[in-house]
Image (cartoon, rainbow, N blue to C red):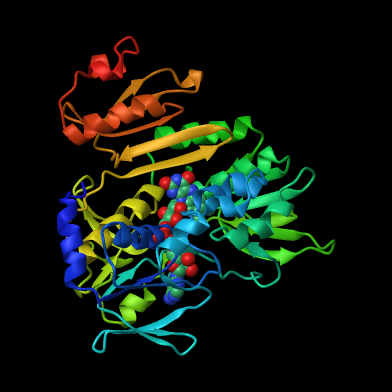
Length: 421
Ligand SMILES: Cc1cc2nc3c(=O)[nH]c(=O)nc-3n(C[C@H](O)[C@H](O)[C@H](O)COP(=O)(O)OP(=O)(O)OC[C@H]3O[C@@H](n4cnc5c(N)ncnc54)[C@H](O)[C@@H]3O)c2cc1C
């Protein structure tokens, strides 16, 4: 997917431009990978990493899982060991927001008044948790989960004897619900849509997730709109529902999606549409500005349309691709989407983009807790989803990438090893 070029070319490229400056905005996963890649591909110029957060580049998946449950420390989310980060020789500006990009002067203007010149700029600004402005929003504490600080603030509330209402039955909401439940909290998930993760998985997987959560004692309310919030006389929070009822709880968590941080790009006049538009070389409408990760909207041949992927895989691979592209290497970033989620010890993985038009072939028994649903167009597998089936799904990925026709009966037959398909 990311075109390879010989090492020698990378070195030559770096030597050609020793005085270049590359600025990376955002020290999440995409920004961290972009920075590492610039150096590993031989960039010897000035590398500046600007991040609003206090932390060096880090990954977010553990924040709703091991860090939230207290099983892992926040430091474990770091992308690099401190020595490796120092070895990058990057000028790191933590705790500072970029205010503006001056494309004419090729300057990045920081909140602290500093102006950073750039030759190439890589936007890895990710996104922020969506908030709800409803009546009573200011009367209660509405928690969200995006940052290390969010996880640290929320963790103490998810304990036995405490009650939590999670607004939103998407991935973050369900992972928070699962972690809270495993910590012994009483959990209610309130979802406006008629099924869980409606935007990202087919109905049969929504049904599986619903059964999983209910079996663990989480109350899931579907088709339940939230109209507002209030503070009850006893000091507890209340979530007011559209049917006139109210849910009283100790803690409210909003898991209602992500808003891409594309304001800098928009204000700089870059083409944006629900995020920053980039091509397969990760270039925005300004060829000296690239974008990667949750903020980038990329043409995706597997979906047949542009996609803004919110996944660990994309943050890493597109961060790498953007760095290589900034160095002038040949890049053709067309990732087969891959996402995973961990809930109650169950690992669900999704490859590709299933649609209602696909024919569904099931391999394995749902009751066993491990199965794969394949989504086919004709005889070709386009997508695959399954819980606790990592091995089969690795083979499924190959089938999808090779676009090889398969026999649906053999695909469904557990007696036929996936490797033989
Ligand atoms: C709790 C949680 C659990 C997840 N679990 C999974 C999972 O199990 N599987 C999976 O595939 N994916 C998961 N994801 C998604 C995955 O973590 C994200 O897709 C990935 O972190 C995106 O990385 P990013 O670098 O693009 O953006 P971010 O991680 O959002 O980083 C962007 C950075 O840019 C900074 N920034 C923004 N604007 C500015 C500015 N103007 N100036 C300076 N800095 C700025 C931000 O502060 C932030 O530090 C999860 C995400 C979360 C939040």
